[in-house]
View 1 (cartoon, helix red, strand yellow):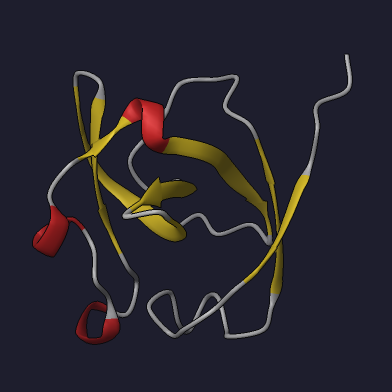
View 2 (cartoon, one colour):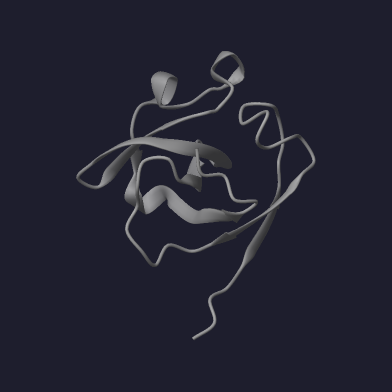
Length: 96
């Protein structure tokens, strides 16, 4: 079974240096379990964001940007509900 692939362009520097502004990324809707260290796309405050999973608790994830000084993330807006997650980024490979 082929999975749909989502293409997104990075906006901002919150995931630098691994993801640069203007860079294209590929993601797939979630079919497997989530793990800390994975980079996800989620919807928060009516916009898509790209962040790394730091912690998982029940059906919620705590996300942070790789560039902590330039990131608005769970430290400001709290935990992300699993239902807000759109996809998991798989290209480029962003494992820490």
